[in-house]
Image (tube, rainbow, N blue to C red):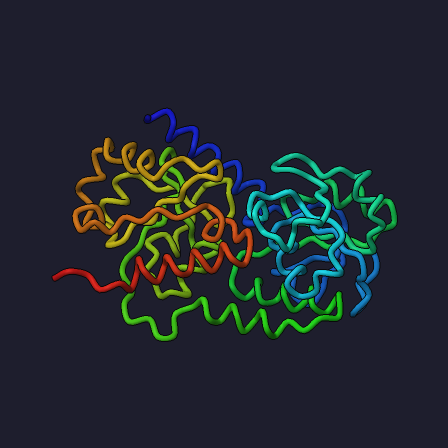
Length: 311
């Protein structure tokens, strides 16, 4: 069981490195757009407003946003499990599956005028596509503001109205948070890895007024936006709420909890004693993934942070 948790931790670490939550910076020349926290244009010319008619999206979040803005403009998407049972994406060609690189031949055959990828994951294929003379865009969403900014940018490129989506995003957040419990979001056990304020997860916790015990910490973690903690540090902080992240491959909640119950510090925490330990999916909290995944994570945060507690 302990080894299974270690493998799960490794999978999450790898996924954080690869997907949109990374802070990887490419060395190739880049032309900046309005807000570099949301998107970076990797072509030598600025993308023109309303110019994109056929778009291939190599990230699940961009694919989802684009499809909700104007489904007719999306001609190819990444093969994500998030879209497996979604009828909106049923007939849209997949150009990649899982962690595998996108198929460049499939992309070219779709005759896109814009290909969108996630920084830190799509840099190499985007560079190859750019060399073929196709307009490209790299995106990075590591805050709520960058999610809104990306939505506005994509809407501008395909000549769509972003306001309905922006209005929907607002419904995900609490109106007036009344509590702010100290919180530890635990994305792996070995090492103990937690998001600070420079990550999507950390920013989302801040939107819910949670007192993220790792918010202002900096460390030597190779993953931008995340810090490693010692068991002693966790005990010292003694969080009221603990959020565990289920790895992308989806182990059971029982597996996560059973592995942690064997740790000496676990039973000493007030979150454990008060039964305020919650398991979240990787998509939505660590990697935004899709709009529905974000909404689900927000609903869970409301329950975990604001639900009345027994006296």
